[in-house]
Picture 1 (cartoon, rainbow, N blue to C red):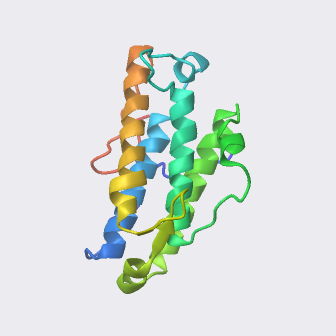
Picture 2 (picture 1 turned 120 degrees about the vertical axis):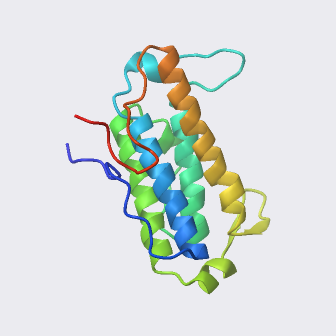
Length: 175
């Protein structure tokens, strides 16, 4: 199996602009997701926290859907097929690779944009209403980060805590 991306978080940009801040948010999400999903066992992904909360498997599917929305918002590669079918795959490695691959595609698309181009982007949600790209920050990106935190929590509950990656400096767990 090929190594998944985001083992390390890329170096920070030299300066802060609208585009580089968005790239850093993507990098942070991808790095956290990569390590939150590393070493998940069947009992971890199928853990049912109860009270109407999503299982980790459902969270992984939802995060993939959210990442696809981010892809659309910046014109990065996206799947044209049924997202529910894609997200319902039982092979966790496929879902992880797909999610991280899309986040890489977003990074590439953003890296090619000027701040003005980014600021002029809009995206459409299900009902056809269009929103400025900035809603991606407080919408899908914030939501995805929340769900990665939930995956981390459910892992602790099942006795399989997330590997101790250093999310502050973006380094993998010590071997």
